[in-house]
Amino acid sequence: MRGVIYLLLLVSFLYANTSVINKDNFSLPSKNSKEEFKVTLDWLKDKPKSITKDFYILQYLKEDISSKEALAALSMVKYVNNKIFFEFAKKFKNDETLAVIQCMNASAKELISTYDDCIKVGLSLYKATSLSQTQLNQAIQLVQDKYPNFAKQLKIISSSIPFTKVISTSVDNFYEIYLSVGGKFRVDYLNYKLPKSTILKVKKDKRFERLIKYSITNPKLDLLSKSFLNIDDKKFSSDTSFYLALNELNNSNFDKALKYLDNSYKKAYSQEIKNKVLFWKYQITFDNSFLEQLSNSQHIDLYSLYAKELLNKKLPKIKYDIALQHNETSKFDTTNPFLWVDVLKNTKDLDKQKVDYYQSIFTDEKTKPYLAYILNKYNNYKDNFYLLPYKEYLSNYPIKRQALVYSLARQESRFIPSSISTSYAQGVMQIMPFLSKVIAKRLNEKYNIFNQFDVKTNLKYANYHLNNLEKNVSNPLFIAYSYNGGYGYFKSLKKQGLFVKKGFFEPFMSMELISYDETREYGKKVLANYYIYLNYLDKKNSFKLSSIFENLIE
Picture: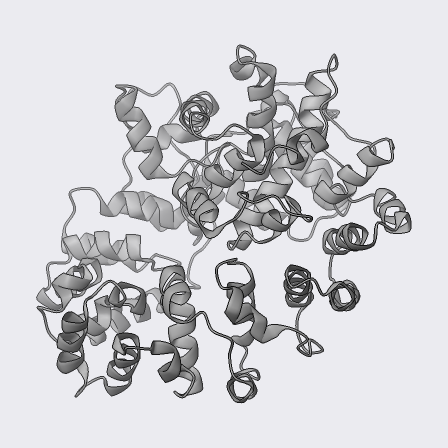
């Protein structure tokens, strides 16, 4: 079974650097074409290896094709992920391949009725925590001869007091368990202060900083997080020093928190991180010099915006529109994702000649987001573009919804209609395929996944989704968390204790303790966007960040 997986990965690797870019073959069907677009092998062959090509290969694998055609498509994939592998396995009717797919998809209870290889492939430690003592023992018996170390990990999970076992096991097993079992198991069975001997044993491992973060970002792991009080952070990243500062704050050690913040600032690699540190120094000390320094920052982020608001300072210069060098209808097809791939590739090293070339191509309203991307990169991201495209599709919505859509779209795609993410989210609003399929069904529309590259359709589906989110959450920050991480994830944050208790450093402490890096930073950026867009669109009313912050604790 393992041989099948290694073979598939090898095939992908062998083809990893064989693609040839041929701009003449980037064509997609015309928007006015009555024929529904269908991916073929011939169409795929000349496309450059990319996430975009992987997306189209996935759609091809879902069609009625032979195992030979499926294997040919797989050989062109850049990254073989589970989605692609699962669809491939359905076509490649090999007993071992199908066995792998079945094991990976099986529940924990189903797996214990199988065999050793299947359990090893399909039973993660997270899945294993859902099994009863009897079921765990059954799994251990099945795997212990062929996979003794995996059996040892399962024995630790199944023990009456897992904590006592995990602190005495090997470093690798310690991290495998602590970082893989899931938040509930960590809270229920591993929330104890680590002995100094265990800290000495595991601290040199590169996973130690992940353990610190996992612990501090879950308020229910209050005992485990005490293990990291007053710890030496000399070799840690700026982010880890920052989390250690928050940990000290949660234990009322303000002086130690400031020391960690000093270290975080010194190691910071971006102005945004430095602004965050300055903000927290002000929160601790109420020293206006920190607020003044923060308000003078030219980097636009939530921290600098709030400082400017508190000190009644004006925003840096913001560009809500962009001047076109040529005012004519562009022939650039904004619905073609491969053209965007081409732009990204050709702009890795921008010079004046390339800028002039793209200014001659991006010549109308629909291509302004592309031109903004080019100019922003060429000017080292000094331009503060907050464009307002696609007004014809948003004008009928209330101003707050318009501001919200612009805020999300700017963060999701920079308004690029043909954008595809690594998880295959599509379009201006980066809607996941499973979600667009559900929405199409609810709207009673025929589903065509490629329609999501059409701005009008993508925005319509996004607004439908936002209508549903707003039934459960009311403010733009929580909507941003739910849009990015899912409403279920946002609910789990509240179950952990975030945004539910008033405290001296709230709601800012809860905002920093979001466990997913992407969702945490996404929420801050969307809220900063919202502040700028709403104040620009609604000039009759002044929107304050403080009004949002005052109502985040529910």
